Amino acid sequence: MRHRRDHRKLGRSGAHRRAMLRNLVTSLLDHEEVRTTTAKAKEARRVAERMITLGKRGSLHARRHALRTLRSRQVAAKVFDELAPRYAERPGGYTRILKLGRRHGDNAEMAILQLVDREPPAGDASPAET
Image: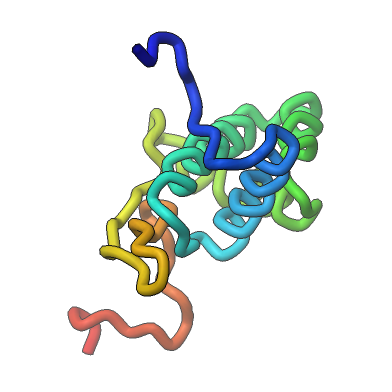
């Protein structure tokens, strides 16, 4: 039975898993979209949503907690200055996971983890705009 198992091990040691999730979340918050396996996306989503919630608090204490996880001061500043105001009215659910299918080579389930309500990159015209 899986009672009280609250995270996936992802086939790594604890230190490796924490480092990988920190890197993945930092990239997600920087680029607002990342392509990874479905299992990693589900774990990274938990951490990313916590970072945005800390950004919404806006205190120095919250900023220091976020900096313990995020690998870049610039990304932390983006969370507190850009992302927190964008999601101020949203009570949670800041990310979405879009499944892509299976990867050639090892047949791993792939997914895109992205922030909801994100601005499309410059030069990426949606079909509605053309």
